[in-house]
Length: 251
Length: 261
Image (cartoon, rainbow over the protein chains, first blue to last red):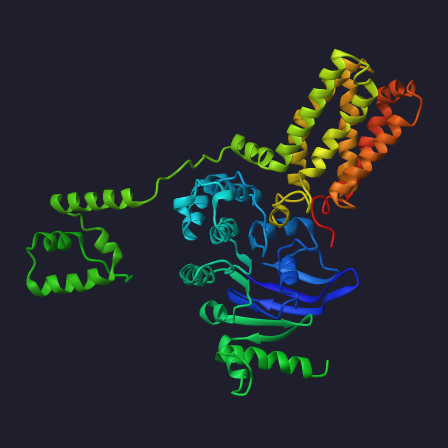
């Protein structure tokens, strides 16, 4: 079973409630996660990455209830996660960095050496595989981060702002990789660039004010926008129209 | 692709050019669609040479393979234990500090009084352990926390790394000070480290280390100096503390090394 289902999710930091009663269903494919700053995109990613424990709610990843420790471990083996900001050990080479995560994800040892190189190759970093992390540029670091996320061929891949710091050419290559990964895995990509969504996502989810205000095809989001909505492209107009509608509608 | 494949004899005849034109066309049409039949045509000697040369030139264009390590059990232990530079830093710190103090004490007990060594040596592994994980001190914390080996497992690996170096140094310190039997110095080392792990499941590990080290300082400094020997020699006491901390760590194992929400 390759799905994610979230039911009645509540997350808060102290007194500030980020999500209250959020429901979400994701199937195989590339899902865009859109929303204004502070809407809770990163919080949702961290809950699904099993890094942040929700106050309440039922979260099932790939058929595993994350409340159950042994099921949680099973789910984590099939999970790939790229946080928005991540640190690294400066003296690690790219290959050591990715290998470290292959071991942490409890991959079968026989698969590790090839899987490490394949992941590095898929993000186009093979030429720099033996360079130390401290010598990489920002875009290369992000690609190394993507490599560790995909090294175990995850069934659930969570990428928080993966295109930040990539140049236009790398962004195009990355979208092609996304489409390839989305063929047999659940891929959730949070982004503030709506053009990423049109180019690579099969479905779009829009969160605002702790609620899921839209879920559907990119074309449906485009169709929601009218000529008098603000935005430079059809999907931007759809995005603002849905947000406006959600904010004026009674709760 | 299709259930139908060209008969081997017909294929041979096609390669040799001895088929009638009409038959050759239909074989070609099939070969276009069928990978299996295409693969079963052995290239002749000259074609094989060209293919080999192409393979070599393609291979030489790939970047060098680098050092792909075989994934053995020992490699796993090396990666998991040695990976955290935070843990490596803690090693260096504990070894350097304790070695300097031990040397100082060996030179003259008046320069470095024994109680100072007793204060520092057992607390160092606790501090080192706490620094090797946790949101504030481990740059990879967020990434590691979402992996199956994250949390308690990786914390124990790193604890092992710190203790492996710090504990022998503490024993050496015990030998030099003459306070208790050297082997007994291991007990406070392990107990304070276990306490830090237990407390680290409730609050930020770095703060847990500060609390434990602070409590240890109070215990060492508060009573008259004669009480120190009793303190270090109290085997059941230390075992009790270690056991209690281990129970807490086990009960709260899902919270160790993961951020409290």
